[in-house]
Length: 486
Image 1: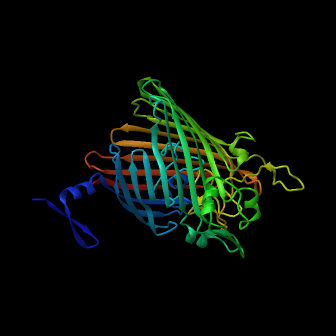
Image 2: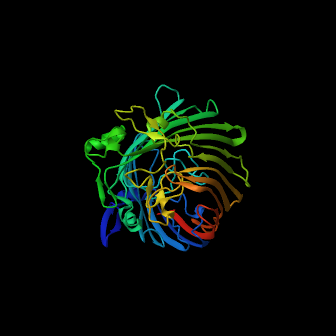
């Protein structure tokens, strides 16, 4: 006699064989979370807001309640699947009801397919201690997309484990049309129905079992294309046919149905970075990992014609069984050069090309590399959501800064995290600041995970801002989270 289980769906009861029900619920877990923030000053302190996948608010007093159900991928099987439903209701956020994650993943051998909105972090940066990658950081809300590729490093046959690669191609759509219309001031630029594209390819050279030094390097690129842009009374209708999907895959000039600038250069807003790291697995479980990211927005920067002055250069150290300091990150970031202030597009009269004044994260047609007001790249380039004049742009894409992250476990059920950042900001070449604006941001955070309360953890965070970019702010946040298996 077969055992039968009941599964309640939408108020009805579905009868399933027991083995089918067990397979469905295998590796199924849940997460509930609430966060409440209180601040004084200009805004919620920077590090209480940044790099939280957009589930945060710059408003001084805010809160949210979040719940999700997830199925994890079974990595030991040739074929497996995963899914997630993650919803939130919020107070004093950019929206009240938030579909934070809604996705389904499929895996067959090394190939992967992901459909929907899913939280993702930079490939090269520690998500807890880094300031964030230059192209992707985890600062903005997830973008719904269809993503296919090889998500984990796969060894090349015949290399005896010394060479592996991974990569992806994705297309999707931005979802912040309503927010842009509400935020933008009359006469300023906003967009709708904008499409998304990303791709990357990484290689790993080294075999840790044979030699303790591992090299990783690769290229990641992204683009905004299609949709409509509104600038005052002008509407720019960008094409989004099949051929345009190929034009952003291999960046190339737009057709006659695009503005002249898109025809002379490339269609859409393109950006990306070259990323490299070396990881040294030292004796007694030390790990030392220097890394370097070079950002670009055109071919001249991509291929180093004007040097690689703009970068994120960092080092991450993991200490062996040290309860006071378990991990340490230092980063230097510069976006100041942007190949210089001079730009000239070639014409029949003057054929020379000068590819300067790149204006990182901004674009003449699109509202820049942002989603729901939060920058998708490194958050130290201050996001448009902070602008008080209803302009959706990055007011200071030219900056230099230093960032420090420290983490440790002084007790078995207690973890701390400290973030310190300092930047100098010049504005943009087109609209420079009259004076350099300095900015300092700090975070001290404690997470308590009591052993007697399985699945519970409590996080208390304190943030402070000082400087000309964001003004003076101080505040705290309490986060309570419960996780478990179903």
